[in-house]
Length: 573
Image (tube, rainbow, N blue to C red; front, side, top):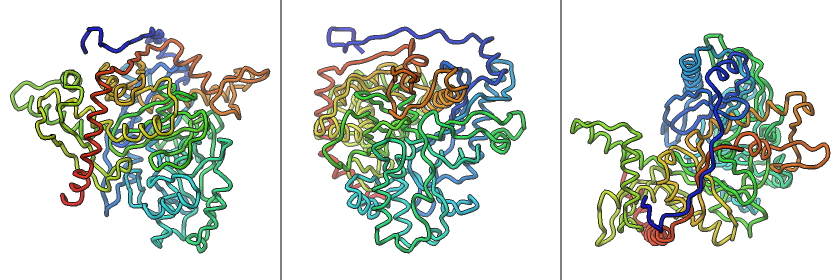
């Protein structure tokens, strides 16, 4: 990034002091720490925090989805093995970093990739392979629901998968006693409670305007569909109970503790937060839960969440309507593809460095290549990157094939190549956000960003600011991600459960808003503002006029090139 007058404005606020090692060890020993676990697409992550959100230790476990009979899935054995491995890595980090054993927790929370389909029978046994958000074969069912509800119902939502199974006459439909999400399933294994945080629930079925329950009118419309007249269940019976952030979601049981920690060291009794989706934890992790704020979470998939001030003009297929974990309305721009192709290219550069006998550490390699991208031409010199490892509904691509394409006369340099890769990581997202910000006229003061791509300071952040023509803020916790956000929800839930008024915290029906009324108590928003983010370092970058104009040219070419990407999916197997 140059230091001349064209460099975008940048502001920074100081970070709060972190807990000393002795303080951290004592909090862990006393069972006062809070644990968040998130099952992401490629990693299961755990974050252990203190009451103010400071990370005390973290753990992780790598895993991959499988394509089984044209269905993207994870086995439940892999889920159980993965959370055990992740927890063991966390416990090892606690032992090595603080010289104490992790035996008790104040609170615990689980989040996972949103949407998908996980049907269970009356004994809680799985009836069909877990179907992730990546599966896009529910076109007919989602279209029927969208017409019936007069609301955009995405292909990946649980209700689309359920109706698809009904319409296909799948054998297991007759035996369904419950459906849930991956986060809801793990939470039930840990606590025995079949509940779901409202943010995750809003990706199963539309939420009422009150923000605290499924929409009763739409439940009735679903029941009236000809296609479901023969099923032996009703939708309200099989959907999980909806909870707001901070509400009682049970406690860690002895069976749940043993599932996480087969050694027997972890004791039951931790307060449990309502399980959430990765979109909700991303909003919490970036403090983007109030109107005129939003966040972008970038990983294997990428999505933007914008908290709304009012209603949109009508249903838009590019926009999903979901909620914050406190129940406030949110416009979601979801893309199936994010940093996966970018990571693959950087892996190739890493291998090249190994072959010439000069291996480079991943952080240095990312920094070097991202830096090169920042020096590329504003429009990437006519180089286009389509990062579509899978189909992309935002741009009407049924089956993805990653493509690197050059316009006639393009300048293929390393700098332009890397800028195109960075643009491509947010390409489909930028298409959807243009609909929300320009066509729908939604106002945004700032958008917060988190995910691994933003840990390389400033580069991806500036690309995103230019792509959205909106200031983008990145906090010191940007790389912590959803596990940290879930740990914050667990800590908030513990506060609400500790003697209520004595702790002066409670959940409000006015979801997501602070309260100054007599007898009122700080909301999730107030907890984040006053406790977690009060002194946290944050850097904000404004759009660079030259960069924004260059990205606009690049995006226009990207959209014109989409027929090539669609053809690739039709012809390349």
